[in-house]
Image 1: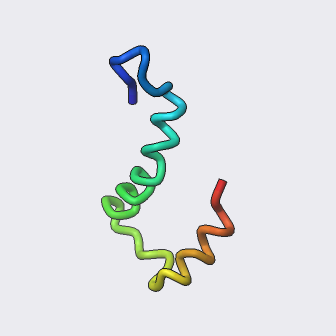
Image 2: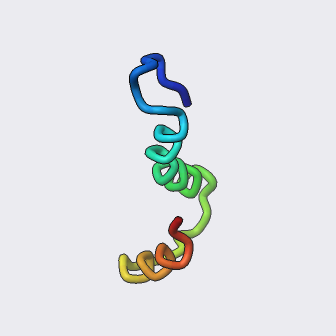
Image 3: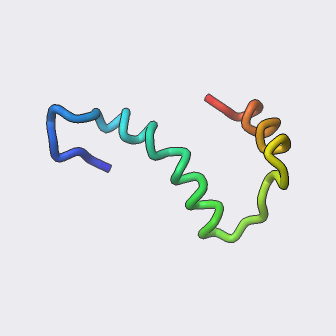
Length: 51
């Protein structure tokens, strides 16, 4: 990912911004089973792995 405007966000900032969406895209396109069936289950997992 890059930015054509040198005054715009840095590559690191762009990467941080798109990382969550890429994780979702990967799970959906790979056809893996959902890790959590409820939002509460998702939050429990997220709290274990969040940066």
